[in-house]
Image 1 (cartoon, rainbow, N blue to C red):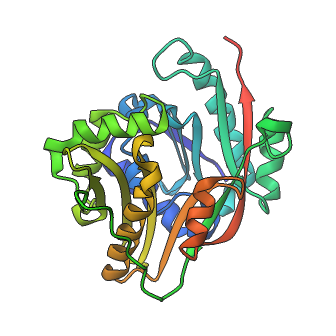
Image 2 (cartoon, rainbow, N blue to C red; image 1 turned 60 degrees about the vertical axis):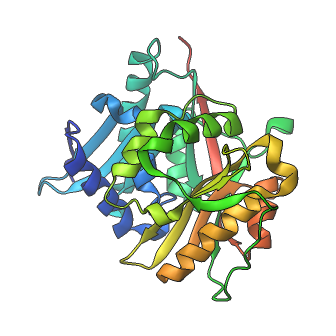
Image 3 (cartoon, rainbow, N blue to C red; image 1 turned 45 degrees about the horizontal axis):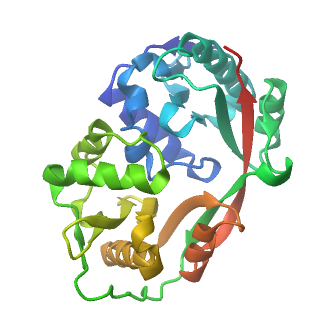
Length: 304
């Protein structure tokens, strides 16, 4: 099948990208939370997005160099999988060198793949990517987890003086960004990115949970996403300020987010996290999330 690249043209293409991911949900890591990922500042430069169409002008595959995550996001139509991923990785390598000395540049890029996707693994290895599952103390792998337990989520009440509520909209974006940056030790979250999530048609303010400290500061957050077509939810992201972790406010925020998803009718709720060595993994497990896919992390270093 012939595949034709085409420049990214904005919101209409984002809709096409999300639709392709949703059509083949079981073979893609990110589907429900794409409104969050496709709002990132990586897309401020449209050349960081690669689109490929077939001869019928149907989207066959796409990729984004997600600078905030140091990750190549990609979705493929199964009918062109072998050819498409190799094409994407060649495009990505060419683009990586072009942006090396720009704010989008990264010396290392990662790509995720389900453990069972042998053809994708072969393509990644042929392109010079190396699996990080067994590289010593820096080994890294991830999991996709799902909660399908219909039992209502137990809510956890914070200590007196703390308040669980929804983000107050644009007026509170700056405060959220500062908290997010502190939690993850990175300045990758920006006001522009967070603002775009609020403006996305899939955004729901009732699923944008924060915990307010007695002094008015934001102390924790849990953003959830809901797909009405499949009645499925996704948690992305979740965090708690280090100052308040002893009070388990991350657990409080997560419980509230899951409760709100259930109230909307979510039958299945997903989350991607690091594997069993992770504190986050144990937290999700305590809420009846179970591993449904092992996710291998592949890495490639690029010289300037």
